[in-house]
Image (cartoon, rainbow, N blue to C red; front, top):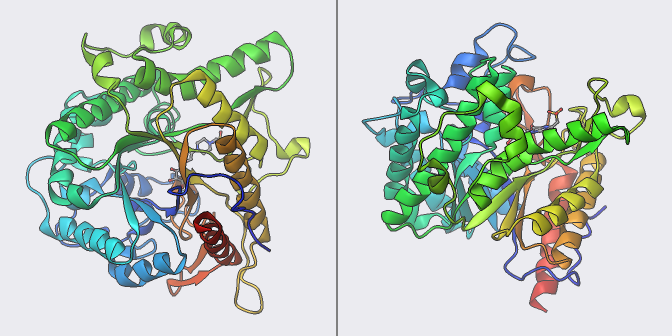
Length: 448
Ligand code: GBH
């Protein structure tokens, strides 16, 4: 079975195909020399926080298996690898001294990628705040914004000349809402006002970091990664329509409008009432720095029902192992809608993929045809949107390999490479071969 990345579809010839991971989910080596704890190390110890009671102190043991993993990435034939940098690994307390062990690890990662002809796409913050900063208020505290800018400058000083791309944040909505309003992700707070303040501080830290990195002479293109789910009303009922519009405001417009239009959406601001964030007069201008690129993570759509939570499986719709509906048409609709509503910079699909049960078969392989199908239909949606004029520059599969899936622990597998957690052996799944073969064919066609 193969993925229809058909060369005759006109994608730009420099379109970037890649795979993605994040530091906390794969690295392990949580207590190696000089590394500070992150809020996720602490959150994992909270009873009931992680479905299978696991933590990420070993995870995929990527830090100790770097060379093997670099070869693995190269064997996929991708153009780029998207990874994140663990702030407490390089700056254990979140301010002040740097860890040479930590910086050295990312040095070797970046050099190893470049030696194999793979572009390093770095994300500065994929949720693992140094715990020391959490004890000082975390992202609710405005001071953390300035700590983040210092961290960003330190990373650029050390690695900036060799990075193909830098993202400030991964999915600020998840950090704010799941981490501070619903409390199901670290740091486990449950306050709508805290979440709103966190979202503002994340956006502000993004804008101030872009200003600082540019002032320092950044050469890598700078952007931010947002998670996006189209919101469809469950019924034509005006209550469902209004809810869908508000959810779209909270999830998408709350981030896109300040970044690209310099203001928060009025309906969401009004809905927050007394929970709206505190701002200083120059904050909105700082947030709206020109973006060199935008990253979009897409997994599923969401259906808004004023009658309560809406479960796609109960409606007979296809879902992944996360229970998320499989809907490539919503992906296409999202991309064309973004293009018509906003002046998009070059846009990367920085994450797309699905969790599936992935049993290892008698032949020792994983024939993950459901994942191949997911990737095939979603890549087709990307190709179609690009042909229609959406300025798409690249696509990254989530994920390179099975890993620590946050509050779900190790039970949910997103990788195109299987990880046996007893032995830590990596085995490419059928989807890894399908992706590699498709990229080979696409390149042959793109050159012709
Ligand atoms: C990404 O988050 C993360 O960047 C990555 O680290 C993670 O491993 C990966 O996805 C898979 O989870 O929550 O039922 O309302 C994605 C977060 C997933 C949040 C979809 C919104 C909507 C479905 N998004 N979710 S639901």
